[in-house]
Image (tube, rainbow, N blue to C red):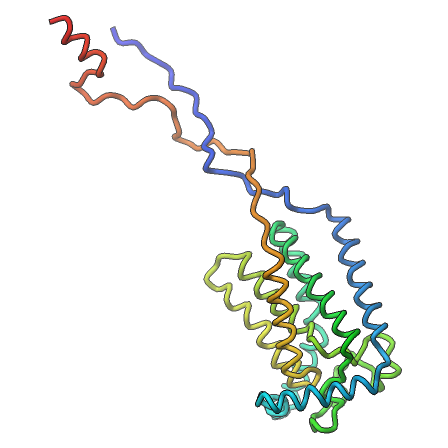
Length: 284
């Protein structure tokens, strides 16, 4: 008589795990932290304001260094933008409106979808910004639009829109003598790096267009030198080398995998198990 046995209870498959959300920090704390860092940065830039003579001396040194290094002239990029007034207006708008919103949306998306990458990106951006603030304090630099030797057009003042006051000495909202490094380029490059690391789509490399466009805009509008972007790249590289992406935590939450069973595999038809064969041989 054949006996009927019930199937064994399926046990969880440890290879299938829930997404780890334990790396997401509290929202209120993050908002206060990001706002606090931004205010410290803005206050620090204001401390670096007012060093007009030193800023222009440094500008001449940077300009001469670029010519010694045979870097392409910033004027060549500006000439391309000045071919049409709509194009230069778009470049000025990009400079004025994309920098902060793009970085903020980047952090918000990482916080919601990739919390582990968010913590890493926030630390890298904070380190990059802190290093930039120290350089702004120690090396005030007038942008190329203010340098007579550069012979460049202040496109924002001529064509608009502009985020700076016409007279730098009266500008209470921004420090116009903080050209090096370019945080416009540094933050844009970090957005691209972060999105490439945090996503897996084959289109993720298109994020490199953001820092590329930013580079053309900051140089073409005469707000930054090539060396400003190069310095930002070096500082970001150091920050990325020091601050590594945290490893994911092993989650204890598991899913039941359908079809998983711990029943021993049935023996092939016509074959007895090894103990039965031994017993049969002993009884002969």
